[in-house]
Length: 248
Image 1 (cartoon, rainbow, N blue to C red):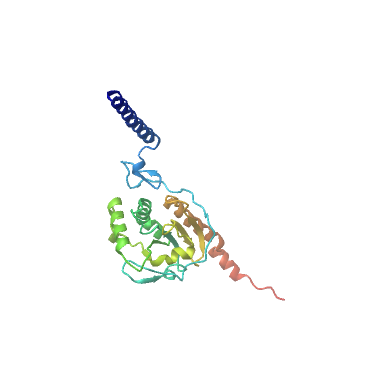
Image 2: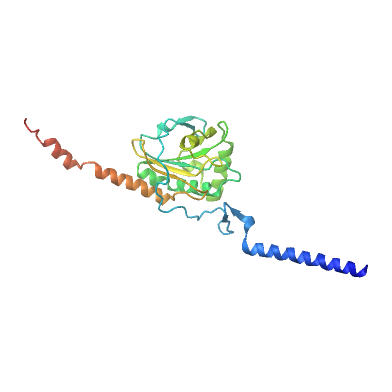
């Protein structure tokens, strides 16, 4: 009996050490797996991905959809806002966040903050920026207030200090129109010219796949440059006006 007890004890001890060894190997292979978001390691020095680098030279990566200017969203005061209030009146950048995800998406938080802090640069280019926050139900500010509250706290800005329009997409109407539904919405960016035509469309293939602010500013500047090349200079316009029609 004594020998059997000893052997069983040795087997139990061996099994315990084997389990500990497996856990150690898994820890070495997948370090910090309990502190990841979307497959990206959360750093103690940058827990909210403030320094995350988005796509630096983004190009259109999807079929250009029809302009959604007839879609109606809501502002934070609950007022219905047709996208035609913006689209077709000036250059417009439309940024689709992932919406009311749980937990709050740190990449949506980071990119929203960067647009807030860069808003004046877009305004100087006579370009509007719209941040859209999709929700599954009727209009409500509960989710977006939580999102903005956390975003302000994480990145150090105040809502009242920016005029950047933030709109709510109830029932994912705009999301479905654009065909970007996935876990609410794929992160996406669209740029419209003054006529309301989409000139740039980028749909993220993952939660981190988004154009950087610098990339979007570059697209807007390129649009302005192309438009300037198409328009005749004042001298050319005067010369054309002075040309007499040829008699038939």
